[in-house]
Length: 76
Image 1 (spheres, one colour):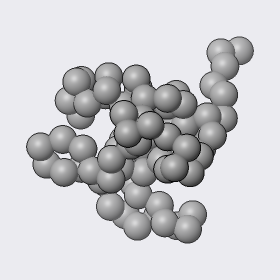
Image 2 (image 1 turned 135 degrees about the vertical axis):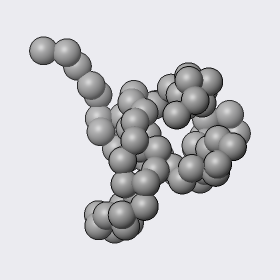
Image 3 (image 1 turned 120 degrees about the vertical axis):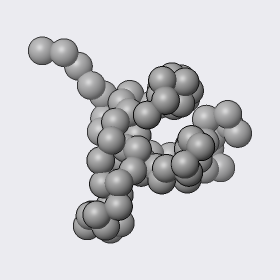
Image 4 (image 1 turned 90 degrees about the vertical axis):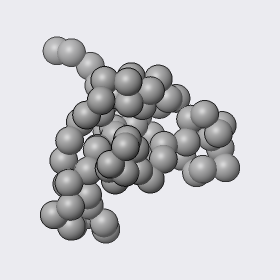
């Protein structure tokens, strides 16, 4: 993943992690590779600014994204 895309995604409100994984729909893996974006809490699109909406695809190769709610991440 391009480091520019990584930084842009991490700068969005509520995003706490970005990585690679497989797209899930209804909790079931589709087997399709994607960029997984972890957020503290999922919120309706209407509650986000245009800048903070995570696109359905990113990068030159239109890599799919998957937003998952992970809560707060803390080091132990």
